Length: 440
Image (cartoon, rainbow, N blue to C red; front, side, top):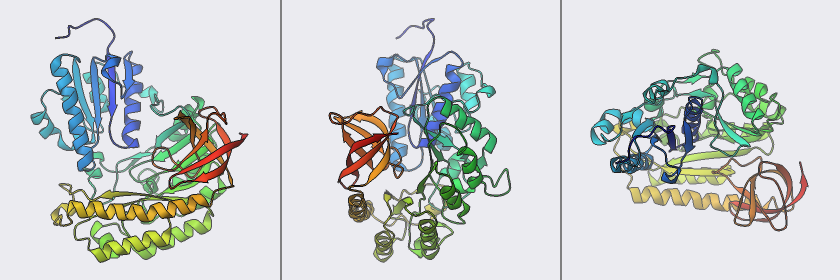
């Protein structure tokens, strides 16, 4: 058994799930560092932490399984005596705290999504209010996620997020601008605005939707070159966002708008509060108002009762809309959601088959769109050097989920975190090959 030393505590913060969880971990690490802890993010036992905090995801079955397996892994490490303390926080802990305490008692304490002060207190650390807006980044230093609100007031029948994150709470424009200035001062060039639901921003504190006003304010922050929008709900979409996007060069012509489905009957069962016709009108308006806008969406297949005809309606919608980027999830039957009252009657094999069919359609669309870029020049932000290539992204691409631009590192040189002008020489389904023709 490891003996207690007088060395400074070292904490390994392990993050699972989405970018919103990542921001929560960054805030936690900031607080710990200012309380004189050594902190690593997603480290290994080679880093010799004596405390581990697992920030969990509880969104769908696969995410829950990964979170539980990670907790069990570190519980075994603690039992061996290789760490002193193990704490669990985040969505899974918020949703299943009682069950987890009973099933995995090796964990010293479980905390919910809004219990950061309690977690810090358990670690004998003070919650420092003066650190508002400050972050220890776990991303490359040139881009960061900016969480503009917490929680969600939507009532989608399949979604458990409100159970874990609570009601929608917006941050003030002033505080977000302050955070953006701090990030810019520390080298961040790209901000990705995230929330459970972007378009609801401001309704709770300003009594009206204020995302467009926030965009105008953030665009004034010196040092920020790109501002990108993620997770926008399509129903009652505030169309002045497109006006702001067109008016502000720093706001990327990019929108991540999870549509989930297109068949009207499925949308009704999902409680999405929108029809296929209204969705098409919104997409057309976006493309007319902001020519060349990149639209990313995510879709959900295998929802209870989804017939082959309803699925084919979705396939035809994808063919017609020709989205730039598409991600697909299979339905997960989540307890305490209204859809859990329905029979989960689409077999898992069929769910996976339908997801693959959507991605096959999208693969052809993506290749077609990429081939149209050959011979054209784009501003590219470079993220990393990997496998003999500098790897970057255009304005049309968000990290990890979208296409990438590769330039040969033996024939081109760029600095990681810098922009460069790149001529596209070759196109693949999800990658572009190019050469540097100018520096920004």
